[in-house]
Image (tube, rainbow, N blue to C red; front, side, top):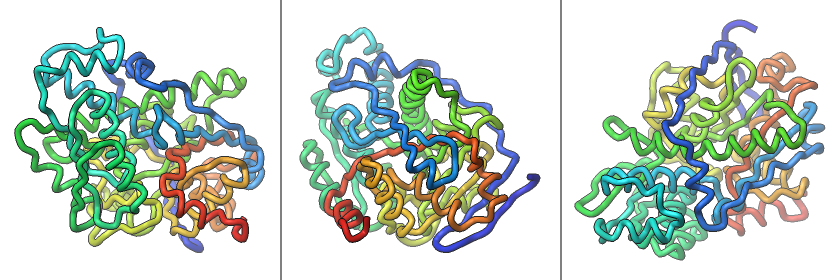
Amino acid sequence: MTGVLSGAGRGVHWRISDAATRSGVESDRDPRPFHRRLPHYEETPLIDVPALAERLGVRRIVVKLESDRLGLPSFKILGASWATLRLLEERLGASLTECGSIEEMGRALESLKPLTLVAATDGNHGRAVARVARWLGLEASILVPADMADARRRALIDEGATVTVVDGPYDAAVEASKSVGPGELVVSDTSWAGYETVPRWIIDGYATIFAEIDEQLSLMSMAGPDVVAVQVGVGALAAAVIDHYPAPETRIVAVEPERADCVARSITAGRPVSLPGGQDSIMAGLNCGTPSHVAWKELATGLDATVVIDDDWAREGVRALARAGVVVGESGAAGLAGLMALREQAPPEVCAAAGLRSDASVLLLATEGATDPDAWTEIVEPSHL
């Protein structure tokens, strides 16, 4: 293939290129020693799912299941905790790496208190920031969009956070988080002009996921994946994937909801674009209208394909994983959903160009558990399975 393949089918459209380049961004510090000192740390499972491989017509599919990461139902705690550590070290003017536990770190921060961590969220990132604040004896102020599900809002309150509902979508919550006062620190997983360091640290924190995957694949006598499907909100996790996997050995397929496809539209435009109006997909963690400024620098050239899907495909992704015994929320199932949509709606040459060949191994990142249990139950009720 040369150039770009683009097209659309039922509830899906795609853009596939053979020109991806990745130089990667190497972090100055490895986050794994810090993560291993956090409460409840253990590697999340990497699950071999033959039924999904058969459905997609590939040799093998493995799923990295992030439904229980450090006691939370999402991978976000890895980035939030690492960025918070780096930010607090900067504010303190001293290293915290000598502290043997999170409790010791909290005691080392007494001179900074009272101190509040601030974040905008659709659910998982804000809950992670609130958990880190609670561990360290700090306050948390979390700004949320008006349409956030009650279950996700209650989870923030249960973490001890002060929750402020912003009149508007996720991007409006991000805008509100920029106005902080004395004694407040913003821990954002998206970036904007002049605010790039903390979001870069969040991307660096996700490196723990891929280091674990490398070790787990080795134990399974399996080489690195031929294809990685990664769901995209502002693009931080996708940037971490780009950092880790070389081109052209690994094809990276980014999946977004329609009406929140800011990365796909930005790639088509050749520059970052912001989407008008609200983003209201059931893939709540992906309801983002503007790419992260710092992530965009890698997304612009590092993705092999973008796939945009409607909510029906997300539901089918949740159900397909449930049939395989894997409980994953709508955002967490989006990567699989995007590949299923390609396989069932795109011509064979498009699937092959995206890496979906009969001899391919595929990595899926199941980034969350059922963070809205009522919605999950409705999607997978027996009549739908």
